[in-house]
Image 1 (tube, rainbow, N blue to C red):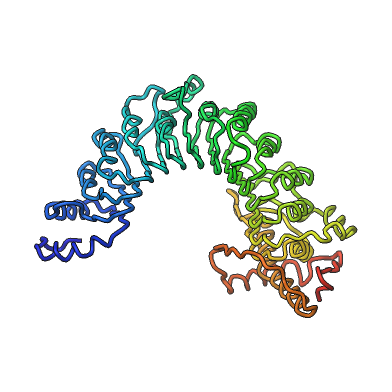
Image 2 (cartoon, helix red, strand yellow):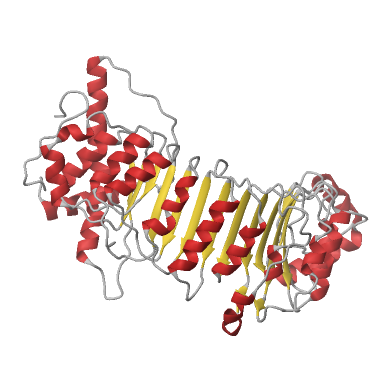
Length: 500
């Protein structure tokens, strides 16, 4: 904040500090910022921050935007910049930036106030031409991109990471998307030759994604994120898309896969089975409108197909019970087949009586099955009963488990008593029962002189442990369930000896 006019002595002092600044993000107060820029630029003979490396410029206002040039230092490596589509001179400046700061390798572009009204929209004409000047980019992120943005970086030789969030498409233009044809700029040259990480977000037509991947030729992607918000899309559309995806991606390179789609409701055979051709996957994150359930056979296929799996997330954004219920049995193949699994997000029916009785009748089924890597379990809105049995089972196959995160969705008609009770029981397991079983296990190891297995430790931010809240939750659960909620008289058998 400038409280008085600048003096020559101020500029001298300021120069001692501006050489130290490596990262800069201006404030959003338009009037104060404008006054400061005017004063500083009038006293400056070059770059205001001569050794700047990272710049976040969100000031797309027509009066403030021109002062961007005072921050384009020759050492700049990363630039995040917003353009107002109603001011074409801003977009025209995009093509001149590489000549001023040729060292920029990471670029994020945000196009505000832009909606696609037709397939031949000219309101943002010249966008692709402006990006042709960027030869040294290794990372490019475009938010609010036009359809031509899918091809604007196709010939960048060093581009390794690309993220495109498409602009909104008007409803009257949605029917025309089926006629869209993406033509590569040079048919004889490969598109995105160095691409390793790709994110296509806000896709309103599966046909767009199909054509994009058809341009790729055995892309060696290590990370892929897809988000579909496509209305009127059928399962056949997605089946066709995944067949194209498998054909144009190197199966040995993909390590991370993220997929978001609210509708239609995809089945295991539609989304999970096609991914089994990627055996090196370490992270699989799937988000649907409704939770997806798994059979024990399906989970066994997951474990055998992805032995290097570290994160598995299958979530729904609504509280709806899946048609196919994932039981506690399904955790056994994951524990045995994915020894590096450290994070699991899955809807689990922990109240199924048949599963509980089968596990008690045949305790040898989980003998020797242990995963020491798993520390975080997200059970969403999963039902649960006999919490002592569930805690013992989880502690047996996941001895390092320390955090369980239930999700309370609530209801338009008020709080659901059953859901609240389930949430409290899961919290009780995480806050009371698992620590108790863990301490007992440690004592058994010490008593027998056996070293506890060593694993890589990853701490998860759970929002902090509120002891008072945990105590209140414990009192409520014990008040609802009694001191022992397992009338079947569970006999807990530990890994070494018996827990007392």
